[in-house]
Length: 292
Image (cartoon, rainbow, N blue to C red; front, side, top):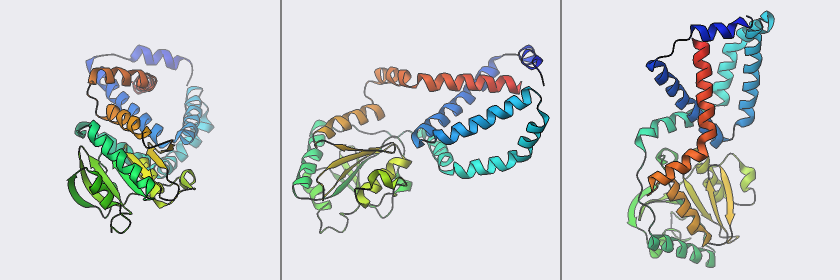
């Protein structure tokens, strides 16, 4: 392999309408992979794989027979190892891909409902009551829940207080809120792998962070010991200064996930995602040229 490879690739490449769709489809898959990797924070592992890919590409380009032969001999082994390392990321990839055409529709939290939830949280803090409140995003969280009970009751302070009353059988679980209703209660969430992030808190906060690791939901955790309000989203954990701060967090969450002004939100999304979109297009074009 020598420098004539590039000229041969470009000379032999014919570009048609089918190729445009081909490149766009591959770009979409690459973009989806980038988003999943960003959410799962697997950048260091990906960097290592990219380094190996670059070494292999250079060995092919410059005709380094020994290096190329070694890579060929361990290629199947590397695929198996990669699949094992990224099994959770691959599952998330297919989950997100499956939900693209099945995006959930959600009713935004109206001012009175928002106020009701915040008032209930303030009561929880005063009475040293722990609570776990989940606001699903566009992805379904049903497969991540265990032991939940269907309720579909309209949100109210008395209902929230009765569910999280320490004498209630379901007070240790989470409530799932959709629209103006508590859809489920006493739900058990998956525990976070990143125990260090919530090392100063209990199981409730680890469960909140755990659901944020496998979905795009927003989870609110109230600590009965510390009297704090914490939010978990996209594998991140944050303690709020006060319950009133939660209003802005919820408004931003619902505006992003279920926007009313879709045009403005689309422009904002495009500005935010321009780098990964360009990277996806360039990568798919390179792959297309090599495949040709």
